[in-house]
Amino acid sequence: MKNPKRVAKIARKTKETDITVEIDLDGSGKSSVSTGIPFLDHMLELFAKHGFFDLKISAVGDLQVDCHHTIEDLGLVLGNAITKAAGEKNGIKRYGWCVLPMDEALAMVSLDLSGRPYLVYDLVPPAAKVKDIDTRLFHEFFQALSVKGGMNLHIILMKGEEAHHVFEAVFKAFAKALDQALSYDSRISGVLSTKGIL
Image (cartoon, rainbow, N blue to C red; front, top):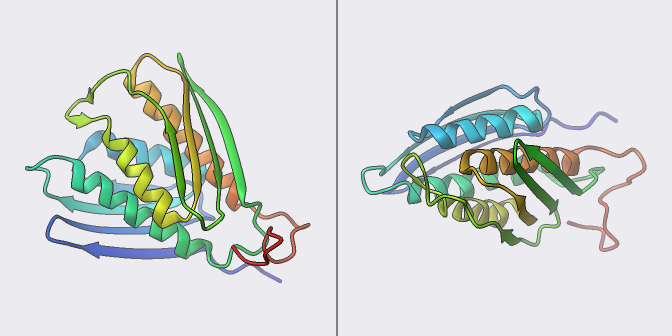
């Protein structure tokens, strides 16, 4: 039996942000990302490329205030899109992990698509800002994503001195771990859980 298409489109509009995310979990890594925050665009393009996800993102936020609302709300919408696209999760491996180097930086991401969100974020940014972004906001992004994505997500920075390298390693490792967790295993009948549901 052929697996259904794992695609989703989620839109969310508030007084602070207007965000639309489209994702194909079985894509080829194509992306079109516009958030008004160039560094975040770059990180999400890396996520799509290294996870083999086709990704379209349009985000307009109150950047005149700061980046917080846009980054956090984008985590919510992307998490929702991943959850919707994954569907019932029949036949998937459920768990994924990756230890990924980027020059001097080394990041570990491990996750479980359990439906029970929990974030462990063991990462102290080596710089307070990347261009105009408060690097602490990436915690808010992954917190929101883990909640709406229904994932137990561990992000651990093992080494890293340059902030760009650190977050590039994190986003790539997250992509690889998520791709692994979403991949199919022919030995799995239904969902990989003794409960019978995820």
